[in-house]
Length: 156
Image (cartoon, rainbow, N blue to C red; front, side, top):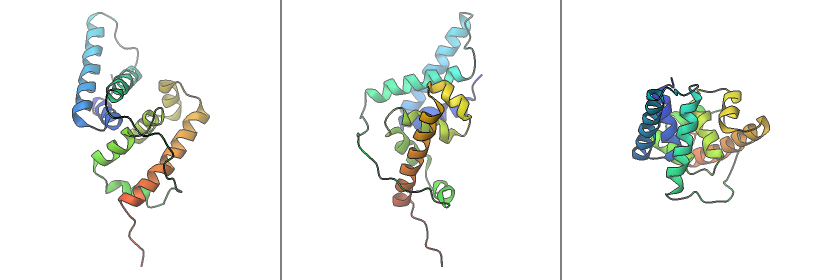
């Protein structure tokens, strides 16, 4: 069985909206219950995240699409953890949900801090170099956004 709070959080990171996340979460759990009732239980906990991912992509595709283009990037700051702690969960979700695919899915799974790289590669059907490149570029873009949103206090 999937970790349901983490599944909801994943849906929230993917959609950027609690109402959409709640709908996707409920539809995913309902589908799992339907499969169990038919004697076809999901094979593993990753099924929940794969299923939710496709549902999130479908929901987001019907809404506003992320703009294509290059985002500003910078090196990851040692103060990044403190900057992230100052964010509201909605701010992180909105930023991740605006990323293009597959980076959106990769970053949502990465920031859940629930899966190994091997598990993420399996769920997303990616090779290690694709996954690591997307995480690295996403984190650098996120750092630039963090620096603009939550500036680091000047050290005295």
